[in-house]
Amino acid sequence: MTALSPFLRLASDPRYVRSAGEPDQSGGSSATDERAQVPGATSRIVGQDYRSFGVVLPVLAGSAGAGASVLAAALTDTLRAAGRCALLVDTAGPARSGLISASETDGQWTTGGSGGVWARYSWRDGVGGSLIARVETDQPHALSPWLPPPAWALDPAPSVEITVADLGQGWLWPADDPLSGPGAWLRPGIPAAPRPLLVVRATRPSLMAAEAALAQLDPWVRAGAAVAPAQLVVMAAWKRAGWPAGVVGAAGARVAALLDDAVVVPYEQHTELGGVTEEPTSRRLQAAVAPLLCRWGLLGRPHPRPRRR
Image (cartoon, rainbow, N blue to C red; front, top):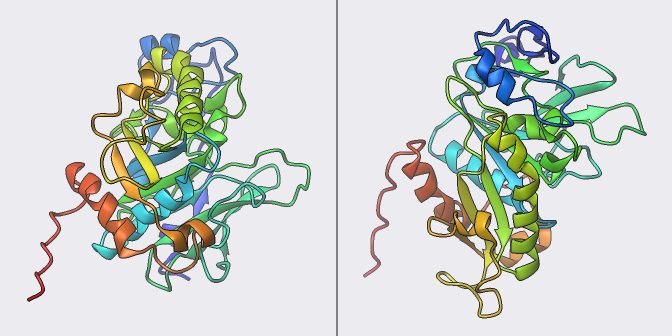
């Protein structure tokens, strides 16, 4: 417990949280603050500090059931298999979580939060594996407990290299100020901006819903208060290349801009039926996301598999 404490503790850090109109204490420019003043926003966070989280990969569901939790788990498992220290963050409450079975047992380590909300840490794949942080609450009527970095910051822990945050569809809530909820993971910051991934299915409803979701985020992106998705991932695809005939042309302008570099993750019946469990995701899923992580410099080049004779 003592050795793990620097990695596991969370602390509320007011240095990075301020309301509109308060002086900027974080080094962010006043121009950035002015751009961030978008209609309906209730708070502003300038110069978000992600240094304790390493490289931040928010995973956004473009539609209901798109597979964001499966992708988040596959990314984390792939990084862990390569020896990288990855933290998987579940921003949803138990009723909304796709990672509720992602660990065999709940960990004993918790953090003191505020307002009856705290984080619990569990081992994803056994002691020494990757960690998963889940948000918990003792308030049964809590609409959407979350764990955004502006209000929660890891103690300095150089061992945390990459954080994968499963936002599900929570990044759209609340609609009038999505960056005050799980969408806070989309805020720009230091030392580098997050790299959001948008998850869809190869269906017309999914692509249309994703387009509407991106349109909802647009005002915050244009204001410089949020980072737009950098990568499209198509989950549970039946085709390795191309789109089903009835889906061609369904993408709107925002989704279409991400199509050329889209990553296709193949359909897998076991995962489709069982979801994310305490077992690592399959090698097939990890192989599908590994090239993306390599391209982003988060993995070394995978070794070619020997051919069978």
